[in-house]
Image 1 (cartoon, rainbow, N blue to C red):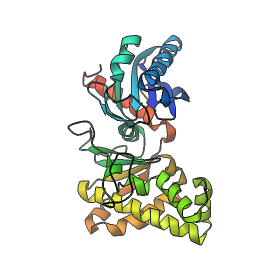
Image 2: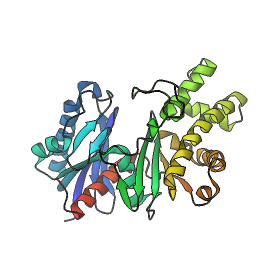
Image 3: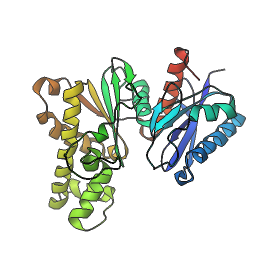
Length: 307
């Protein structure tokens, strides 16, 4: 019998889950509302209940969790999470799930799981040095260096959304000012559009206006793109990666966005950094974190480190 895993992706809005086999096939997947306002323990109670349901229906050999927040991947502790999920910081989500399921359990940060999923079966397959950047409500980052996920001393590496783009700039949810994600996330783009036009325009509609050549929409897009690529240029100069993988909801804009980022970013780079850099969109969409969670479990199993 092949090892089947129950995999979870815990976000502030929804908990995605499924069953994955060692070939990376999602044999089943679904989602439910996180109801994050109920707090971290209630969120994990949902994961436990779904795990038990999966165990009743599938021959599950382990549970792997991708989660928002900064995750100690050795112990399963949420070392820091914003108030998007209240009372989540300090919870050992691995211990809680393991105690109820009696299965091996591992956990990792969600953007790190995106990187692992793209490394296993996506845009970064075969790449040993890359940066994964997710652009959504915030900006998340994961660093893959010398063929390994780099998480830093405190399991918090890759917080590129909080590099300082504008000193004394806008207030950020992290409590500081001028952060990259306050200017270059999809939320920041929405806020810029509202601020300049006085209208709330869905980004899908807005990007159609940009593609159709609307002058005002294009001008705002260029401002946002300049901020995005200025931040990315700092990452490239610091790490000299082989590849940047761009994920998150905004990547649904496809080649239009990819081409615009390349056109704006490459002239900002030192010549050799530009020549050696590839930029791709993530290939696994909403399934990337589930696949990455599975890969994280298999890697722990290979190294004898599952909880």
